[in-house]
Image (cartoon, rainbow, N blue to C red; front, side, top):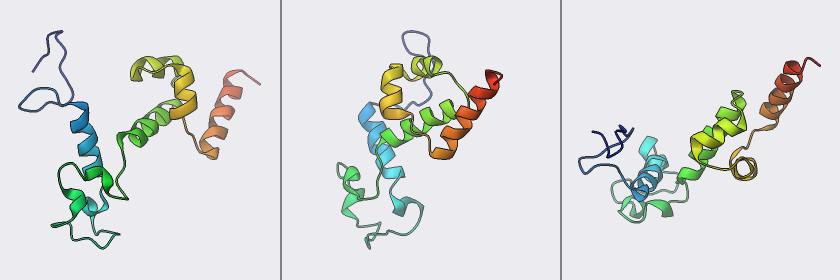
Length: 122
């Protein structure tokens, strides 16, 4: 399936490209703990109110797409991809990436500094 610009989307449905709300709702559902195993909130997955359409985000354990985006951006940066390249890939300004998306832990931050210093020959 191609769009009007000759692109082949990564995700499609029988109705075409999924909407952003479809991705958001699917992300909430896939991050429900009961999707992978037992419910930490003592709910029965078959009757859980959080599994109903429109209530997916209300599960206390469900995640929005934002942590997934943050994780991907942080991973790209940890792999040494320059922030300008990441910015172009994810359609965000480098300052926005620094402020909201690039969240390395201490070990990752130290590895990045070590790599930068090695590249500089210091």
